[in-house]
Image 1 (cartoon, rainbow, N blue to C red):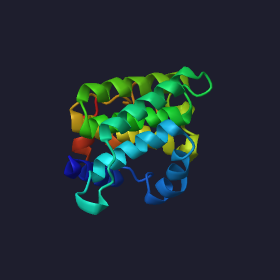
Image 2: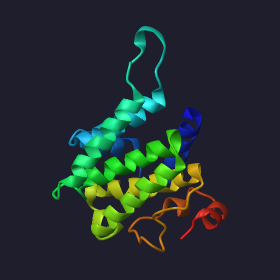
Image 3: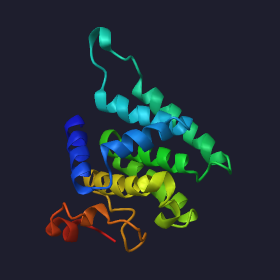
Image 4: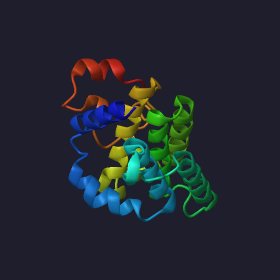
Length: 187
C-alpha cells in the first residue's frame, strides 16, 4: 500500500499545480495543530505510511487505537454546533477518508466522503470553502477526492457537475492528458 500511496502523492503533485510543498508546509501543517481530530487524522496517515520499523526506532503506535482516537475526536467535533462544519472538521473527515482509501475499506472511504460532501454542501458548496486556508482546503478536497476515488474505484464525490469550483478540477489539470480527464471524471 505504501507504494500505491507514494505513487498517488506523486500523481497528486503532478496533476495539481496549486498544491505545493510550500503551501503544505506554511498553511497545512500549522493548521493541523489547531484541532485534535485533524491532528489525530494526520498522525493516522503518517503512521500508516511509515509503518512500524523494527528495532529501537520502532514508534510503537497502535494504528487501530489511533484510528479509534481519530473517530472519537471527529465525533466530538460533530456534536459541537460551532465545530461540526468547521474547516478543521472537514479536513479531519477528509483525511480519514484518505486513510480509508489506502489502508482501509473502500466502503468506509465512500461513507466518509459522503460526510465531507454534506459538510461542504451546508457550507455553500466548494465556493463556501474556497477562501479557507487561502484556497488550500478546496484544492485538497478536490485532489484527495479525485486520487482516492481512483485508488478505490469509487465515483468522484466532487465532480464539477455537482460541485462547481473556482479552481480547475484535478482531472482537467493541464498537466494531465485530455484522454484521462475525459474518460475518468464521473459527474
